[in-house]
Image (cartoon, rainbow, N blue to C red; front, side):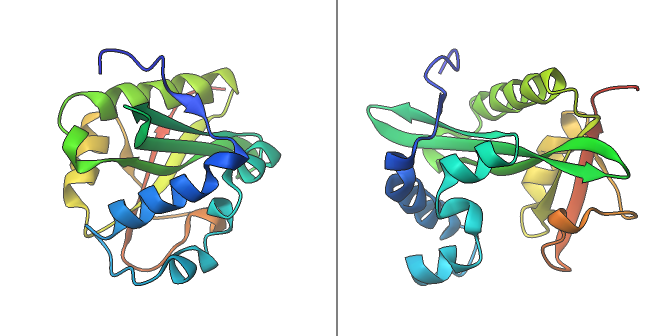
Length: 168
């Protein structure tokens, strides 16, 4: 994967395939039993195209051989009176990890967020994913423990990370 030119916005007809990709990916990290259980609380994945666009963001997928191999999404939230980006659904098929794809996708989303003039890009990482935290730290993201936006709060087993994009 030398470039991200096939990184395309998700459309409504992709929803079932996106959900299947998440079930496949989450089974590696989490106890996921059924599709219905997995998406009951995840309203953004019931109709990803509409959810992210209605929240001033977008959701993209990367395909290889007509199969989804990675996803990334971001939308706008308010944090201390500032518009910030909330990074979500950043997953890469295990067969495509450690090849530079994650760094390229993260840079893509940072550029998108910068163009939106969001002050920060922030998100939560499950503590079971220590390798992911290392990846984000290496890319300039810092952990924060105070004033966590309500939208980010998932559970007590989460690291909250952010990167400042604008100095306004």
